[in-house]
Image 1 (tube, rainbow, N blue to C red):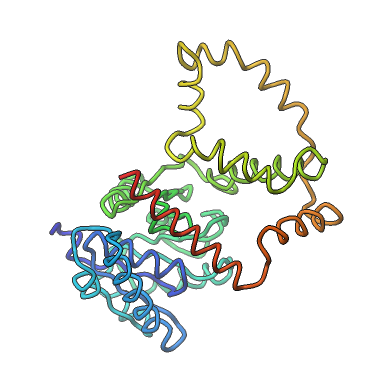
Image 2 (cartoon, one colour):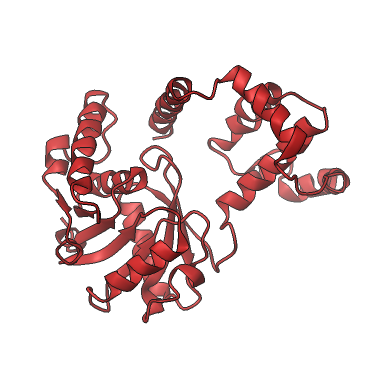
Length: 315
């Protein structure tokens, strides 16, 4: 086991993302301390993690080289932040998506750790310069944004603070790679990072096509799930361009760039996501998948099972 794995990763926050991060780090053989400021929440998270790891082992989908029992032996829960941070070299914050809450957490954490400890946030949309504005040493701060659920969807966006040292990016990249994630480096911070900017572009045009009466909710979702999504499960958009013309991307651009530009000029304004269109789209999707918890939970479980199978296929 490497020297890094003899140290501790502290996960701050024991909700869904915190539990998922803990499982990912455990799969790589790292010692993990999970902390929550609500008494009993962190220990309850361990019970849930144990249940999931046992189920994954039974399904032969457990990640890493250690058994469920061996991974669980590396995990501990804490209600005291100072105790949870002892020995940590990497801190992964997973509290709810509120800027003030995250700023407070990192202010408290910085006061309890040494200068060389990396401070990482799981935020999906808050800018690093805002999240870490109260941290004195911002050179060791980074966003490590996972995709839900991170145990099956392995992408992690690494987003630097303007002052983040390159060595901090290197350590985070190595850690994420070592535990089986697929890290990508953003060279600078940008609102929405990369994943959400691409996702929002797809959402916006899908919404416009339904809103304008071009296609139904069911069919626009099929355009992705049975069309683009089939490719994008293993190819990115740039590689797709490169492979979709006989002579590669230069050939593709020569053949299709004018058509792409023509279509792009027809895109409408940013949707309001409210009013009559929202009511109509809500009605359509609710007829396909009712919005009660029983149906939503069932579809989420199906999603996770499909992602589990896809992750297995991509190995």
